[in-house]
Length: 485
Ligand code: NAD
Image 1: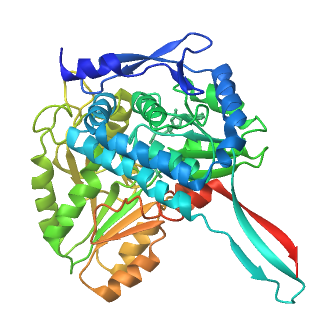
Image 2: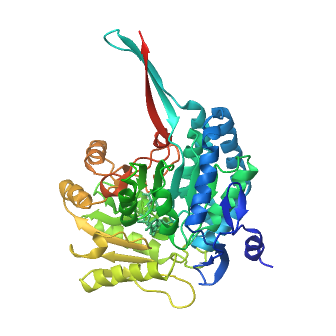
């Protein structure tokens, strides 16, 4: 039996409700596929509206009790969960590689990154701050306290099956909220295993539920209309985020939205080009390009464009493609056929509009959803690839001549999640960092995510922050208590 088969034989596939694996009320299941082969690796229980309401019943039953636990107790459970995640690194990593496709090295670094949200928020749980002051007129005293928002719904995407969950579960639990997670249908196994880990860490039944579903809206809609739910936190596409915001309006739910991106990656003519190529490799190829922070538009000063493009092309062309669990593989498959078709269509559109293909550009025949690592240069302004999120291993390079032109091009998008630029000039660094309309800016850095930093976007990239000291605020409400003088 291979290590994959052994792992799959023990991985939970039932719904996780009220502290236990549970069969769905309507008894259905759906297939989870290995994107490197297209083969079914598991049949997972398929939640429906009844299961969603059972999870909310459990959450509401324990909400007050959970909110009343001491911060230290919540902190200790989160800390223990982090330790168990680290102990189970190999299982979690292999599982993510099998259901999502990324390389084992990337899965291991996601375990470290995703787990870290649990440790970080175990440390934040005991530092929730209110304030006290005297009214300026001397007529009273002002006490400000923080309270948990209440039962939360989290909807997560497939590209980081662990971290996009822990980034929400960590602060929710630290704040004293209960939470129901609806993981992406392509990658539900990682979150089901995490639920078991939380139970092993001592999390009381009902505080966390996990509801895989083939029909996401069947689970989320009844929760969003139930007056007991208090918040929805979502990571995914801007299209679905807008739908969830709309559906949150009737109940005036608190919302946190981590949505799509169209990150610019600017290389100025004074940049350290070796460092810029290294940074572009990370910003573009990390997670196979399937990251909301991925460098979507690489803007290079025309004086260094050919040198940079040739060096980046050599690196990307040398990338070894293969199943994520194969030795030496540096780039796994895309998540599914739909995603691969969408990436291929963006490349074809750019090439037919006159872009130059420097390497790659095609679907790889055979089993699995592989696409060649690709570089496109001289892309005409109207090409779709400059406006839409690529979500694949395709570097799209365009040139510029002035700083103003680069900043204007970078900001010419409805998105504003991440932006990157390379320069050696400190004045320029501060000026450009200020001018970019983006929630996060990397200066001479190709990877910016850090559990201790606030992750979030502006414009249509979202609302709110995850991680950092800001992350827990999303799960707290502010109460003002007026006291006599
Ligand atoms: P998606 O929006 O299609 O799906 C995300 C989640 O929403 C999944 O769990 C899905 O089942 C659920 N969903 C889909 N339709 C729904 C509906 N009608 N009602 C309720 N839930 C629904 O996105 P995806 O393709 O899984 O993920 C890729 C997108 O996520 C990209 O746009 C990417 O930029 C974004 N993303 C953003 C961040 C961030 O932090 N800003 C991080 C990772 C991914």
